[in-house]
Image 1: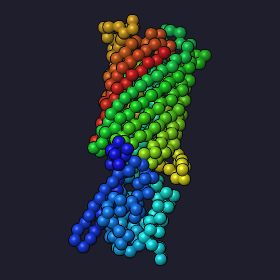
Image 2 (image 1 turned 90 degrees about the vertical axis):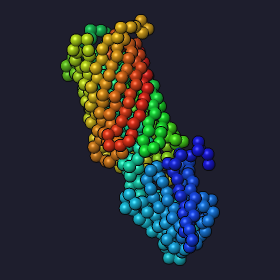
Image 3 (image 1 turned 135 degrees about the vertical axis):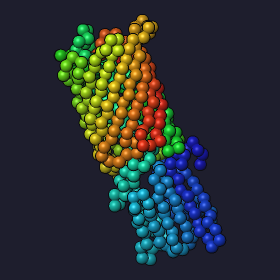
Image 4 (image 1 turned 60 degrees about the vertical axis):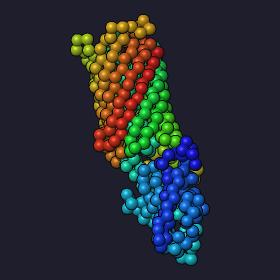
Length: 403
């Protein structure tokens, strides 16, 4: 199997056969979870390790996206044991008069049917101890992307053009605006690298009182993790409510879907959030403080005979500050500004690999030609992300255009 066709070590088995004299080992990796499960039987073992026979005393070490499991054959008989050490899970397949092959069939049915909620426990363990799951656990997961999207939708903190305006800008805010952004990033964690591509789309429509606005937001993400592809997207709806000329609140609801055939998972997520944006000036500097609280949870999805239920429930706090100032040159005939920001995100509830994440960003671009609703604004930025308590770190290029 070529490296480009497999999830490069995220889905592997190692078959060790114990003889009187030695332990003989063979290993392989798999392009998807279905192929890995299919390998947990005689034909798969013999291909991986020709020393294996139906009478072998053997141990099969399985790596499922960073979660270790063991299929054990402790004797030359038919008994099969399935063990996940990190969650203290043991299941024995030793039906009376059953052959080893029949017990292997029972193991396959057990894995595919999510008996004893094993799949849920395994998926929750994956998001707890690894940064590889596309649903949750890292800044590249759908859970993190949904929280980030709601924060961007309701604040002026960050390297992308925002739809947030103040009531004192003194311009006609009656026209809706549309934004398209593009991001490319790379991250490393747990000794592996990934590429992340984001395409967020945003539409802001003012109401009769243009200080109020309805905002529709739809970001899409593609992640390439060393041979494994995942796709996710969400749709959010928010309403901007002004408290004062320089202070707004944006309640929002959002739903999302993520899937990866290579990593063997699919999930739905739903979230509600409330975001505050407060702006003030000091001399030539403009400051923005953004704060949000969100509740987000997963929903089970059945696909191709399998049920995927992560059963995750999290409260998320995201807080940031940005400072910006004028630059001395023009771009496309418009004045330009620089901006620097720091945003921290904390997750509470279900255990995740990265629960304390910080983004440090810089950007430059054109000054809003009309205001926070009707403008032609272009921004280019760079974001460095790291997670306290883990080895996650990443770098992302941001480009945004609002018109």
